[in-house]
Image (cartoon, rainbow, N blue to C red; front, side, top):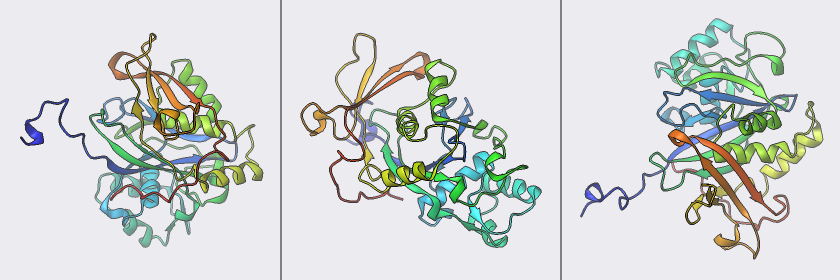
Length: 303
């Protein structure tokens, strides 16, 4: 019997699509957050970091994917070279989004180079097998203070205001401190998914205050280049929902996944009407800097 004739519960899960997402941090320890169009096919209405699926025009480099998607969705272009006029950037952004212009062709034409070296790998996440649409996403972190940034309309680099893409994929884009993002989520003002919640929770513990310090940048870089930054998260559902209706998603290293006795690495997720995530509680009782076993460098999302 082919998988096409199997019942939905027995059919093979869809293959995860390779994608990239970039956490942009400005000099005030704020991260760039975009609000996806509620009508979008994937993650409609959710607040995420800029990102999207890999494309042939990215040359097989997921860092380029992240930079291209960030430009399309927010107008922020992580590239070095002479900054084109705003009208040129706006026209290129729309043309690239509509697949009428190749991203690399635009960069070459204007003497720009994508700042791929500014992107620090910050975990990979694979959508659970029970999801109807699955992705294998490489997350990155980039600090504006150490990267070129063009494409905003006015003001200093870190102060320029990102803009949505006219509703094609996102309807709002803004910088906000990780603590403020988490507070809005807990107040029910925005919706987050477990990967974004996890990364925001992690960064909130490092990016304290409203001015990024060299020590904070070094701390994030240390984490990115450690075993943590190489982790591939493959969430698994553990048993039925609890008495509050929360689903337990276990992560790598949890004691139920072969980790040390008593180790917790999981999220309790409550989903409301329409499948919208309304509550996430992270349980992580170990030091991510020193208590993650050294592992081989994992394969990147298959392009």
